[in-house]
Length: 428
Ligand SMILES: *[C@@H]1O[C@H](CO)[C@@H](O)[C@H](O)[C@H]1NC(C)=O
Ligand SMILES: *[C@@H]1O[C@H](CO)[C@@H](O)[C@H](O)[C@H]1NC(C)=O
Image (cartoon, rainbow, N blue to C red; front, side, top):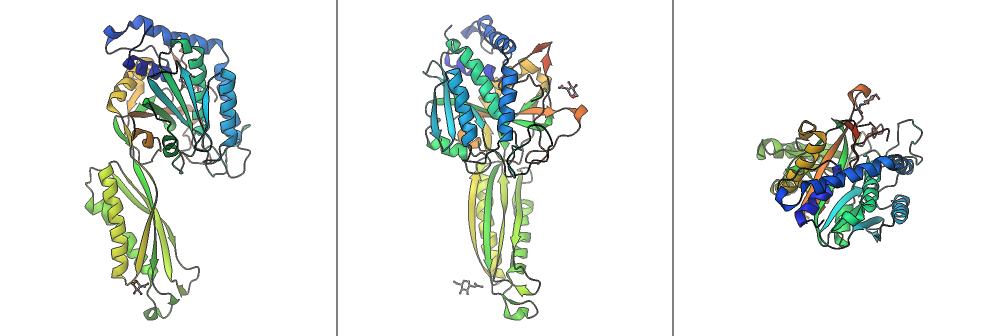
């Protein structure tokens, strides 16, 4: 047996997909030998009731959604399953996080990550396993991500003697704000880890396809909030007031110049003001106005430039209107940047399994993902897994109260494939 380091990396990716792998350097290891491994995994998955078990886990988590850093029951369920499988783990990490270890316990270490948190939304989907918690819902598929990682854990553990190295199973809290990934890193989760993989289900990509790209794939994201202070008074006697409503309006217009006039048109960026709070009355000029919004960019430089200019424009434009302004920058997610070397592995493995036609390159998305924190520390790779089935119509988007995780049964050459992003779909 004896894999070299890079072969272990490859093996881990194989685990993500369970295809028959191709090897760019067949001299380093017998390809016959390695291709047996995914076959074993497949047989293991087919013989057991593993898929039904994963569906059950996903539904249980779906019924009991928990927000960031409150994933106590989800975490308990994960630990109970890891106990059942005999997989050692560390807990608690970052309040509710769990990190399991499968394999020899020695290097190389490669991590697979799933996020656990739900959203503050009331589910609108009427089905047997609808959320039982009012105002909370898994509307971003993290329940499915957890079930998939547990599925991978079970297969890995069933073949642990083949693993010369260690797969680190990262169940993290608070992806939807709260920087759960950063908290996990601060707790030392990436120590000795050489690479990390993550995925997201996607309602716009057809079932049976995966999509990703090397380099930036999701934007860096920041939030800002500003208080613009003037002098309140009667709305009919404006000359005795300093109107912060009008000042805030000028500020918002000026902020729109940052992308349209200062940014390279080929370097995509967004500035949106989404919050505007003034007086509650028709006839009162308020003392102050609060505005807030988000900004996005695909490079650190563009992100920092936007941030600096947002502050300058708000304070400068407020002064023009005889007001004062203070600007706060809140939570930030870095740009999600895929490692170029891992992209080659991804294409080889996914291409072998699904065919290169189903292994798509995609445009970057303006959304953000806190997987980016891991990628700032070690090489990482993030990709999307399709859920769209034309015969069932268009699926609701991420963070919609009508969000579904769909379920299909994917077959390649009549062999049901299985994996972490299990390509063996069924009514999930
Ligand atoms: C703005 O700040 C200056 C300096 O502190 C102060 O003199 C002025 O009154 C403030 N203006 C408003 C409208 O709050
Ligand atoms: C799409 O949905 C239809 C109807 O539910 C189903 O019969 C078909 O197998 C699905 N296609 C795939 C690729 O899963």
